[in-house]
Every structure is written in structure tokens, then in C-alpha cells.
Length: 97
Image (tube, rainbow, N blue to C red; front, side):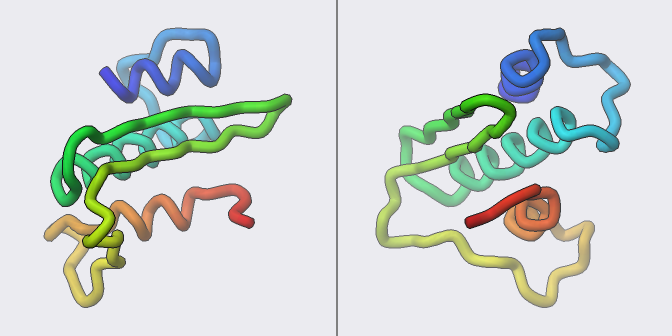
């Protein structure tokens, strides 16, 4: 549901069933899903996902309420073992200031 809503917010269209990762909307959907999953799995409720935009720029804001447990990059894990959501988000980000 989150993936479909993020995609529709960015493009104004429904998420295709065979979506790939070649375009920005698909990347934003993947990053939103990864970060929301991290917030739900490792944080405290409520988890909040917001997509903000101005002009042609988008900001994806994902938060939980666990202020004592900051996000950590997975180190030394095989890709199939999970825990690579933050790495993926960093790799797919177009601009981080």
C-alpha cells in the first residue's frame, strides 16, 4: 500500500505491477518501503512516512519515535541477510545536503 501511494503521489499514476528500478519514481518507492520497514521493525510507533515536494524536488521523510536508538548501517552482512535498507537509500538518493 505504501509503495503504491508513494508512486501515485510522485507520478499521478497507479503503480504498474511489473515496476522496475530504472526511473526516479520506482527508486523513491523502493527507498520509502525500505526505510518504512526499518522504522516499523527497529523503532517505536508510530512510524511516519511523509513525501514532500516543491517544484521538481522531492523529500522523503521517514520517522519513528525511538530517540534512543539511531539508525545504523549494517556492516559485514551478506546481501541476502537483510539490513541493507540504509545503504540502498544512500545509493539511490539523488541529492543529500
